[in-house]
Image (cartoon, rainbow, N blue to C red; front, side, top):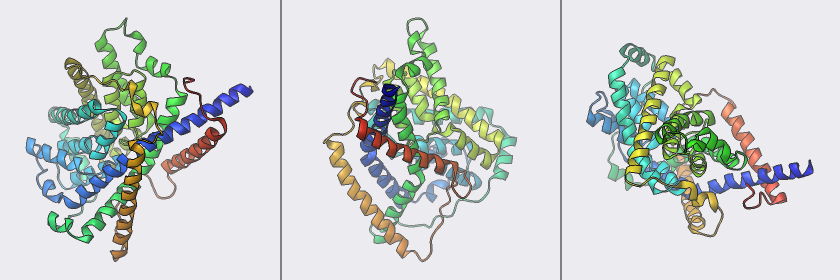
Length: 416
């Protein structure tokens, strides 16, 4: 019994160390990504794009994709922004394109994928994101439920605030423009830090406590000699979105878990389908139901599921045809986390950048005569939400894990 208890506490400590190792590897990337995102959002006059989103043409779909790419990567913020655009008259096809782009084509997500999974996954993410948008647009065009969409548009509340016209160059040369960048940087972090904490912690604990045999069985890796390859790849592409839905993790938080899946032998299609499925987690479907009604919310989820599975299959066999299928099992993030390497120095440098952004944010707040309320509507009511309780539990769990690691030294190498 004592050995069992000791083994548990060792694994608990190792899980906390692994989760914190994920944070450590991604720290500088988050700061860089959100700094670039903040600059784009402050210096690019987005209202010039919104004017052309009333009709579903190739040009307007491209604009919606570009608009999503320069928007917030927070999944809840993406849904709220899409709802506001829909209320302003944007075509429904463009709304779905915007949601896909804002959660799959943003800079900060790309940097994270590059660090954790490698350049092949980054290229796949970009190509696949464009394929996703194309497939979803075609599916909606041929299945467009006019009556449902009309009722959803009537249900959509509020309007996107009119953005002031400004000169990007003048704003970039002004002190106020850079204070706005610092303010946007802090706002972005306020929106995403909870899902990042949950996602990275879940990935760390799953890496240690969930044996590879479980993932291999779930994704049929033991049947490679008895089942046709296409069936296994198809099953992986279908199961991936449901695993994403069950983990309740947003776009930025699910990359470490995708690394765990890839390292466990899950096919390229299964990993990509998992990454693309952040908008299908139950809390986000519930938010869409609040905005558009349950019929349209489930219709969106269905369109996304078919688009994701199809895209994952195209990527899997397309990359295989050119012998570019990645092998994430050898990911350095999984094998070595804490070291005096480029990550250490990058984290120090970008921590200084984060401090600068916070200073700019504080100066922006002081300059403002009154506060501005940015409601991204995470679908929760006031007070301490369910997500807040989950975050609190996870923080306590990480602290306890650090203490356990300090007393037990974690799991010896190779014991997992």
